[in-house]
Length: 158
Image (cartoon, rainbow, N blue to C red; front, side, top):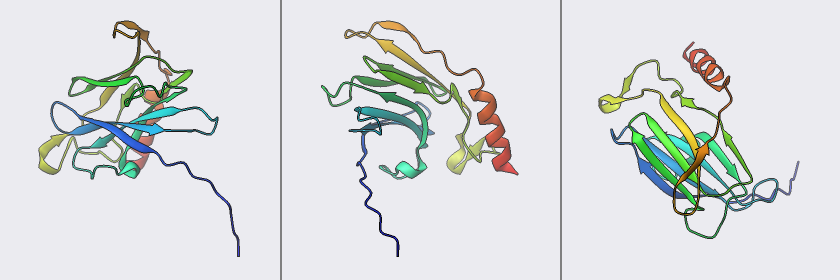
């Protein structure tokens, strides 16, 4: 018998914002203490017909480490600029990762699923803002991330 003493940190969904066409939700998840001991946040996308607080069905698109815990939303604001464009605005973070500049839904061989809602790719960008919300600049994503994601999407269809 194997016994392991494993400490787990409870993540909490603190905000969810539906896309204008109702096909997806952008979700902000609070991570009080990550592996490096920093207060962090994860942003993920889930299909809107998924149960709320179901983090297993949420596909991570960005991770922000070392965020401020001074307000409820950690200084992060999710903003849908259209049904296919999501801006993640943040005030401060020590490290930011944009996993996908263009997110393609896994196993979405069809363009539509239940109810005829679109599963078109979603373009994601991280924007650093100052306290009053003015842009400081976009984060440049890994130029190869779209190729990795397309490869994974094609591989999952086989």
